[in-house]
Structures are given as C-alpha cells and as structure tokens.
Length: 243
Image (spheres, rainbow, N blue to C red):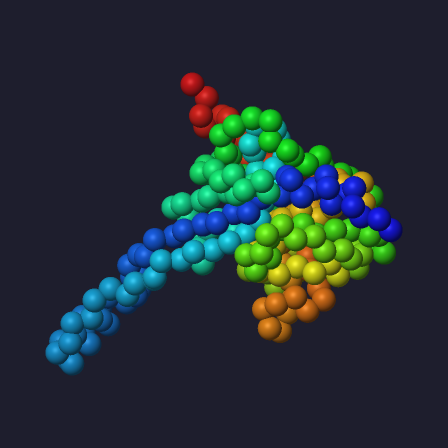
C-alpha cells in the first residue's frame, strides 16, 4: 500500500495544540481538620497549591474558517478546568490563539476556533463502514515531535474502553471506540485517524499501556460520534451568542 496521498491530504490539517494552566490554590476539603492541627501542633497550615501546568496535544481543522476538533482532555486539567491559554500551531509553523467554542465531557470532544480563512481542513469519512483489518493512519504530534504519521490496521470496532477517565457516564460511547495498532503516544490525543482515501474517520483519544507509552493498543472516537458532538456544540454556541 502507498499511503503518501492520504498522508499529504491529512498532514496540513492536523495542528499542534499547546496549553497553559496557571498555578492555583487547592482547598483541602477539610478546613476544620486543618484548624485543629494548627492549634494542636502550633503550625499554620496554609492552602495547598497546584503548580503551573503546560501540556501538548493535537487537533484537526474541519473547516476553512478555523474550526478545530480535539479531545476535551487536551484542553483541560485533572479537575476539568479549561486551560487559560491555548495556542495552535499549524503544519506551516504559523501559531494562533485559540478560543474554546464548546466541549463535551461525555464524548471527550472539544471545539476550538482560530481567526482566519482558507485553512486546510479534513473531510469526514463514514466510520460506520469500517472493517477489521482495514488500513488506517494516525496523524498527530506525539511526544512534542513535529507532525508524525504512523500506520496500522483496525484491530476492532465498537470497543469498550470504560477504563478511560475521560469518558463519563455514557456506556454507548464507551463501547463505540475504534481500536487500532497504529502507534499513538502522549501528544497524539486529538489528532486524526484517517483511511487510505485521506478522510477523517476518528479522533485519537486513548491508549492501553502498562508504562504510559504506546504498547500496541490505541483507540479513536469514531467520526460518527465526533460529527454529532461537533454539530451539537456549534449549534449550542450559536444559540448562546445569538444577538
């Protein structure tokens, strides 16, 4: 198989997302206990702090006017708060400030927007037609490397990844993932899973690994779920901002 045409179609539309979450105080959840210990030990217990966090992930341009789909967990911290600063770098090296249009914790999908026009973008394929054994490519920015393309096959469809902390309270979504053996690592989250026609068939979201690095199993949200979430998020945003 020659994957050059598919890769060429996807690479320009896959972006690098970098986030910054400032340091913040964390309440212990037991202020009375802290007061008691302060009096008993004669030591003042101040608030605990979470240090500044910087993270890196991937996203996919889905329109020529700058709408980007990624994972919700790419743009949030462990407590679910949205990053205060989100920068998007295109394959050509240009960097933009991104605005969060909306997000869904249930599906782990988020939509960003950058200002501009005539951006390269990807076309959705039909994830309902995927078959086990079909060739696919994963495109993203793993381990803060530049655009990286890996190849594999669909290992299974309709896979249950109920272990994922990002997917909450929705059994149907937990059981709908595309499992592949295309190499995916930290930083690939939010990137593209494409077919050999260069169409977007999924958003890479999770791996199973005893070490935290790729161990042969990666999972993507099917395009059918992504499209539905995108439409709902953009529709809600339009209603909320209607003048």
